[in-house]
Image (cartoon, rainbow, N blue to C red):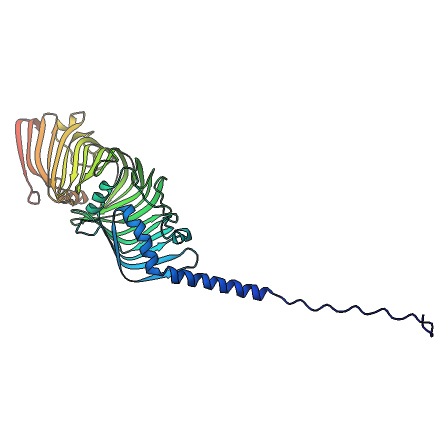
Length: 430
């Protein structure tokens, strides 16, 4: 205690120095390391070299030669991406390119880049303006090893825009394809759209596809819409297809059985004709030729469209060929009435249909119909028949046919005629 009787003041504790915030330093260090890493990848694995490394693994795995022109665009943010232009894909020893594309985007995971393509996996592929030659593609697929071969995985899928598929005698334009993911040993789901063109026939379509595998599939199904512009009218359909593939290791494509169910509506100026069509048979595609043989088909309809069942073959190569034999269930209510006793006969009408010509069906159709002691042998053109049906309420009741009708016995205005032969020689018929 001091002389004054007061206790001394306690000592003031020293103030610790303020700790400096170090997060800007760590952030700066992280940015420097990131920039250094990007620079290292850029210097050690420049864009063109990265693509060459991937192609060096991809080409022998697929048995293809892949070339491109111009600079390679490179993006490292997220999944690394390479963008190339004017790409050409060839099958070695084949003069015509299998694929040409204006632009191709190739997204590669980091593990593929780090392994320099040894661990080959592709995140995503996008093709803009590709042109695909179908005969060359099919020959390449036929030459692949059994199964799916060494097809790499496309984990984020495949996209095609504004594509074109060229076949022999037909093509598909404005082709789009979206595949969310693509794995050789997994089921495939895809959406495809475009316009199929054969001669002057144009058929826009939009389909959802599913298959148990992308290449060596054994089951496939399709759901969607298909239309056909036929000049004098338009055919709009909703379809469901299911098929089993046979001989997966054989050349070409064979589906058996193939089942197709279609809800159809024919639109013309004064005509709106709904009907249903079912088809069952064997489809084979090889060497640019498509064949449905044997095939059975049936329609269910009212009014002007006959309900029928038929069997035979349908093929398309250099031309469309149809050979069908069947029975019409009954004389359609919307057709001109038959004279007695033809109108009194019961039972189906046997018929035979033959066609060889363009896919537009504007060449002559050969038709034979037998019914109750009567038989017609003749020909007609489908466009003329469609125009006649469209104007049936205001036009002539006689169809645009050329041929001969033979009737054993017919009643007309109370008179009975036997051994009647009637010649049809419409000026618009073939």
